[in-house]
Amino acid sequence: MLRVFDLALGYGEEPVLEGVSLEVPRGKFVSLVGPSGSGKTSILRAITGLLTPHSGRVDLTDGQESVGFLFQDDALLPWRTVRENVALGLRIRKVSKTTALIEADGWLNRLSLDGFGRRFPHELSGGQRKRVAIAQVLALKPKLLLMDEPFAALDAIVRTRITQELLNWVEREHLSVLLVTHDLEEALTVSDTVYLLSQGPRARVQTSYEVSIPRPRDIFASRRHPSFVPLLERLWNDMSDAMSSPQV
Image (cartoon, rainbow, N blue to C red):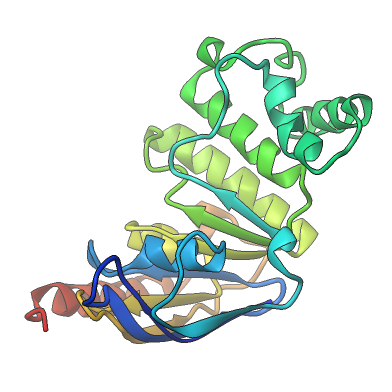
């Protein structure tokens, strides 16, 4: 679904990261973890075309229109109703207003927001706003979902609930996902593969981890799987080494 080859990225002459290669197979959930400044979000920006690499390339099997991006901060327009926000991407793609609003209502119903369509974003809780943002992205029927710490601002209970809901949807629809997160437990709970980036600048993929927990996954049951704690300890130790390594 996605292949990144020998990627070098930066905002000046010195690369934030270089020589980074990774892949997201079709229907798989992949996470990126690493120290702050290692270029995790920059990789997502390069995949979407928002950042031009210094070198290397990004190959998307189904093109840019197959990609959906769920940001840490929602992209809801405060002057539009909830259903109008969900329909916005479809309208940009020239879907008729009537059809787009019908599609929006369907997604709001799927995400337990039936009856909220005529409200405005400021009338919603943080968890409800995040569900609207998810509906906005899924309404475009992406094949590859990019997520940049989308639930970091939510409290633990709401975050767990929404993560489980999204995980259920991803597994049911066989979406491909690339998640950037600082939460190592979250990465191992949801992912098939986790890539660890080294300390930047000139960050690289330090190592990767295959997660063998069976699907479908329940967040709490996954963390009780016999392989979970040993893998978490290994990832934690490797992450600590990456953060303590001197920058080049």
